[in-house]
Length: 122
Image (cartoon, rainbow, N blue to C red; front, top):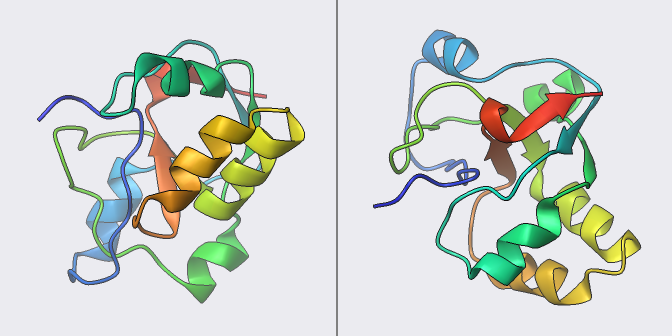
């Protein structure tokens, strides 16, 4: 499996919450995607993330529906959690409808995690 630009967070597998907190940055604010992340989507879809500013999942959102497993694929350390619905809204607001529709169709979890090496805190 290739490194993913983010991972879906499953709610089906139980995991140690302290380990999750070590692996994912839990802060509020926004991230800006700086370069095309790797992943399973076609490159033209993945490129649509570049220059988007995504709101990080808030403590309230995480407490309301906590992630339980973040070790899918090979990307296991570091990153920023973003609500999938908010990320899709940003793509749509940026005129990137095809990419928004692509991500919306995927049966993945509530959160996306973007690797720190592909973005910056703004």
